Structure formats: C-alpha cells, structure tokens
Amino acid sequence: MIRIGKSTSADQVRDVRGVIFDCDGVMVDSFQANVVFYNSFKKRYGLPPMTREEEEYSHAQSVSRSLARILPPERVDEALELNRQSDYRDLLPYIKIEPGLISLLSLLRFHGVPMAVNTNRTNTMELLLSHLGLFGFFSPVMTAAKVSQSKPHPESMHYILRSWNMQPRQAAYIGDSSLDQQAAEQAGVRFWSYKNPKLQAEMLIEDFVDLRRLFVQVLRDREASSRA
Image 1: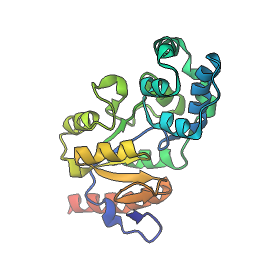
Image 2: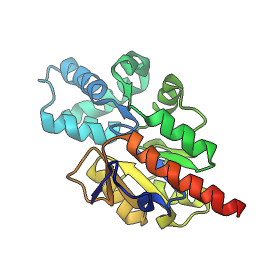
Image 3: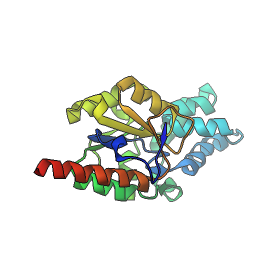
C-alpha cells in the first residue's frame, strides 16, 4: 500500500476517471455524533453506554444493524420506530467536515470528474449534505435505503458504475472500514483507505490536500493532451 505524501507520483491516480466517497469517517468526522445517537437508545432502555467495539461497529453499519447489535431483540422494532420519528438535526453540531475535502471536490467538479457517495446511512444523507453545503457535488448518492443489500454487498457500487457508464478499474472508492474495502473488492473498483493503515488498499490517504495535489497534476496533463 502506498502512503500518499509529497513525493508520491501522480501516476497513482492517472487512470482514475471517477471517485466514490464513503461518508462517515471519510467526508465527515461523525464518530461522536454516532456515539451520542446510539447511547440515547441505550440510556432509554436502562442499558450501559456502548463499548468501544459497539461504537466502532455502529459507526460503519446501518441503523437497523447497529440497533440490532446494541439492544435486546425485543426492543429493536420500537427503537427503529423511534428513530424514524427522531430529528437528526440535533446531532449536526457534533459533525465536522474533513479538512481539505471541499477544495478537492471543487477541483474534481471543475474538471468534470464524476463523484458519488456510497454510504450505509439511510435517511439522513440529504440533510447532512445540505448542512455541509455539499449539494451538487455528487451523483448518484447511494444509501442503505436505496438498495436491497447494503455494504459490503457491491449492489450500490454496480449502480454507480452503470450510471457513469464506467468500467470498475476507472473508479476509485475512498473508505475507512473493512465494509468499504470488501465492497470495492467485490465490485472490482480501486480501493483507497482514508486514515486507516490496517486495511488492504492501493493507497493510504492521510490528508485530502495531498490527494488534491496528485489530481491537479493529472488533470492538467489530461487537459493539455486533449488540446494537443
């Protein structure tokens, strides 16, 4: 795995024509928001706060899977109904956008590089994009509510590739969990790990600033070639 740095060659992104982003842990730091959200259910049912393992699981999985993991089986249906009635806006103050992301997205959009979101969120993605000022960057935006099988199943990846009319190796997926890695592998898409050196990935991204630098060179070369 190549760790992106100032000496990394732009050849690492030269063949990439589309970029797919996971949401939590990649576009945004929402870990604390998830902890607050799921612990509210634990508190409601008189249970102790989540363990570290439960926190990490719920950060990557869908709401239904997470509630099934942290609550007694007889409480899950009621909790899912309460979730549908909850106001996610209460958690927005706990969510922070990753540094350098908007600059990278603006560059890719300016040069016509398609971007998509592939997340296991269900009904909160549009609200989050609006809150962060990210509407208009991504198409399509795939959530667990829009597919019959969520990540790590590659259904959402296949949908994105079809909508772009793109071959798998022309796209890269930026994720931070084993679910993301598996989804990319099963779809044949390049996988780039964001801040998680434990994953099997082509590249490890520590900073969106460095990734943007690679794309600047490649996109300039691509435009110069098209004008020649």
